[in-house]
Length: 167
Image 1 (cartoon, helix red, strand yellow):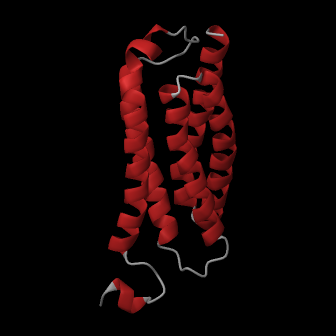
Image 2 (cartoon, rainbow, N blue to C red):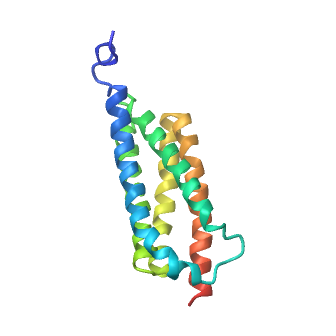
Image 3 (cartoon, rainbow, N blue to C red):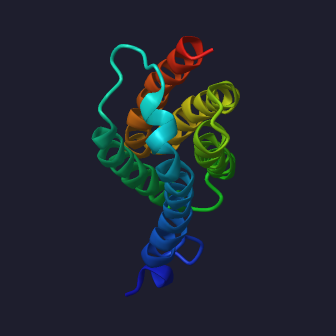
């Protein structure tokens, strides 16, 4: 028996996987598009705060975080559409994902640590809210978003440090 036959209101696993992976992959690619051409020479010559990781670490960390984000969204999309809080959780997930991609353009493409802060601060607040909403609906989905919330908090430290040290 197919999944859609057993629960006609629930999104099929394949459709949910595509609906979760496509926007997260798009955000990742947009962020990479904005970031990569601005690492050398702009980012490389900036004064950076203590604890700044080496450049090579950012790619693997963000890859893992995007995979976790997509899996978390997949789990929420697989819930019954009438699940209380599901729609709001999906909406705020996409709000934080949009800000996530926008940060790369603000910080790297615009070469503006101040503009980066203006994007990453609300992004972190929405990301924490999304993590809480996801956790209430599906604990595993919430746990999958938690590392992104922690990394974004660390990114605020890095972004603010770069702003202060280079102003």
